[in-house]
Image (cartoon, rainbow, N blue to C red; front, side):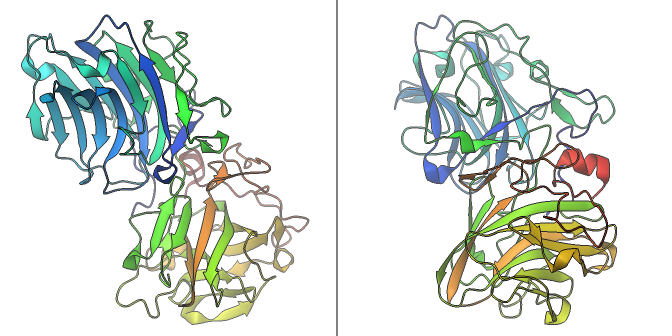
Length: 483
């Protein structure tokens, strides 16, 4: 579990090209985009480029396919073992195929994929090439080169689909900067570049200056009311299915936001959805689920909507966690370990180290939005309920991050009873509570994130009699304000 987000994107480079938005695909919604392509004149060469942040793992998930029929298609997908497959099938036969040895299992990373094809190239190994974050992938479990001049179904007449194959293999995660070029085998440098100050960081570049042909397209997902709009100037719009304005996110390759961590499901008692911002207990989830970013310094804000409870004995916990879980579920609830702190719904108390508890604020229930204000510069923790800071702005003292077991705090939630199961919708600033749009969209003091309530406003109360600016947990802020 990373303490900071991986260094494969430029997060705080002044003057760099900025990607404002992504489109969130939720596999449970069967979300996809499709368009018909006809009268193509190029069938041997082309390039597909996109940025992607994974949601779930362990399933076939289709990024792209051009599907003529079940016997003729070219596509890109994650396989059930989390490797990436690029395949061309012509008349039922596989005529080109790459399957990586690398497994793509980082839920906190934005990856750039560039599939660059020219079956007429005189060198067999150059006919179908895959680049990940600007570097050519060379380690494959399957490496089948197309024969010279073979038809590449990626670029023929057919149905282009993003996010599904037929009525299956639905995509789960965030997609940004999707580009299709027919007829030209382009290098990844047409779509990205290494940062001059941090040469291991691959970052997006402006693709609007590319030469787009009549069949090409560029999806930037910046119009929430028209997510499938083509910005290439060629008018090749898609038709979106089961996607709405709420699926536009500010989480992007140039500003990567914290999400809940699908790899942190100790005891397997959580399911995640909506870009890893909705977490639901599938049985008594004593053991907390944590987010992808560990925080060591700075002032940070996020919101959690206590969305639902099934069963009896409602006990929901929202807070922070600085310990790992091992052994049995018993005694492993959030705030049952040293260096955990959580706000409990039914009594309004804060539970802290050694299961101690302290009177704090109001009770809360389903439908309430809890704001979490974490001040690691002064080692204080605050909670707000529906925009009003609790305890009249008096912070709860916590142990310094450096003195905890992990040396950092992770956002976390859990339930605390065997009689019911909780659902939480988390907003780290990407712009929605799971599948629900915000009624407002307030940014932090640096201008990042979209929240229901102002991260710097305690609803009429200050923070321990002081003004404090709390920030969204994203790479722009981590790059400039520590953490």
